[in-house]
Length: 140
Image: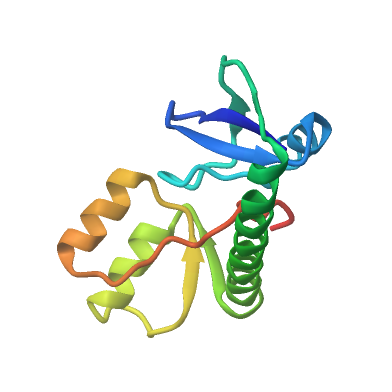
């Protein structure tokens, strides 16, 4: 096991444990690692000295990895459900969410993109929204 300090494109840093260097590089390049603070998948290794786990630490890490993998699978399934069943409104999400909230258009399930500031404003207005976990859809 190898531990890296990772950093997203918004300069949030966090730790990630990987079976090895190649696994880390592969997951990062595929966008499979997301920032726990902002959910960005634009993640890179930060400068640091890597820590290699001992056998005793490997056992504890294996249990954590299994738990993390299960959690990531649930989040991926949630994202898949939303993408397959909700209407994608793209960057028009804040405006469309407001229109639905204020009864200006029919109520329906939507998803799309919003900046952190736009999301904050929606919440302050009482518009019910939630972040969608996992990497952003690339085939839409």
